[in-house]
Image 1 (cartoon, rainbow, N blue to C red):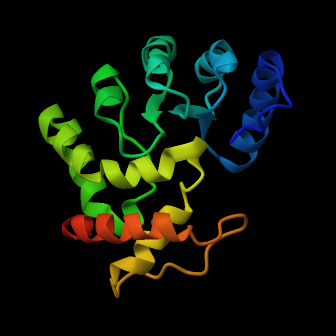
Image 2 (cartoon, rainbow, N blue to C red; image 1 turned 90 degrees about the vertical axis):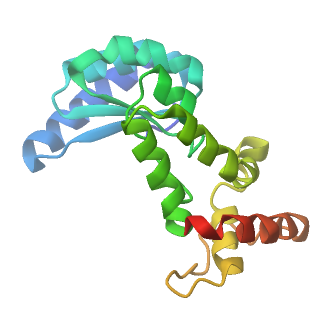
Length: 194
C-alpha cells in the first residue's frame, strides 16, 4: 500500500521498482500494488510492465480507471477491483476478482459474486450486489469512515458462533447508535449469505 500525499509519480515508480527488486530477488516475493492516487496511473502501468515482482494492481479509486489500467497493464499482471463487493460493473470492464471486506461475516455473498463473474453472469452478480448494497453503503459513506467498524459491528450483531469480532482495531471504535440500528436490520437480511 503506497504512502499517499508524500510522493510523486516518478518517485512511486523508482522506489517500488527498487523495493520489488530487493524483496522479489531476496525473498521470492510478489506484490499487488494498491492504486489510490489517480495521478500515479502512468507510473503504476510502467511498474507493472517493467517489474517481474509486481504482478497486479488493486484499484481503489473508481470505475473510470478500470479500462486504462486493463489496457495499460495488458498481460503484465492482473487488474483487480478493490472497492468492496460493489464490483459487477468493474468486472464487465475487465477486472479479474475483487477484494471483500465483508467476506469474514458474509462469505457466501462474496463467493457467489465471484463465481457469477467468472461464468460471465452479470445479472446474478448484480442481484447479489444489490442485496449487500445497504451494508456497502454504510461501509463506504463519508470517505469509508465505517469500512472496518461496520463489518465488526455486523459480526457482533449477527449472533454467529463460528466467527469472533474481536475488540476492533486502532482508530476504529464501535459505530454510533444510529448506525448500529441500521446494521441490526441489515445483518438479519444478510444472514443467508453467511
